Length: 197
Image 1 (cartoon, helix red, strand yellow):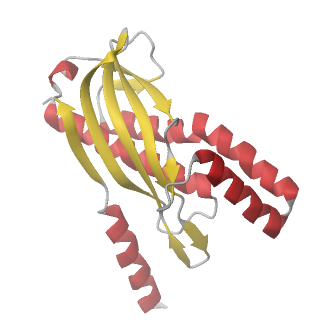
Image 2: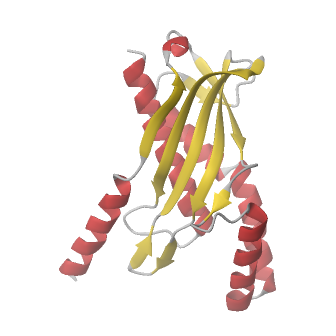
């Protein structure tokens, strides 16, 4: 049992270290002295798995898998939960991590001078099988724009492979993915804090 726990911890820690953040363009200067930041989420170009499935293909795959295993009603519940998670838990987890790790108040603040658009580019949902599990991974493009002029991108950061899980494992795909957004928010907030000191 101790060996299995050690193996699981090593695998989990390798995923924790796997996230990378890279500044693609711009710098952090405009955030100095700011008190609040607006957030928007964009899922319009998201793909899934190594096959780069579209969201429609991913939903079709998951609904078929769940219906075969647990019935049509459960599959429909999952689909409803997926659509809800995009507007609630993914956003909430990201914002909670940002606000816990950064002084700039981040949220749905349309009056803020600047907005960070969280463009989700790729998701690997991971899996759960009791004592064995694999975290999700979430990749995003974080675009900082002027709220009044969203065509003006001041800073763009690629965030790849943010791991989503906990040490115990999360059976629900959407909960695992939400943890990937939490990790993204935490890493981004710490990066901002370091850059604007």
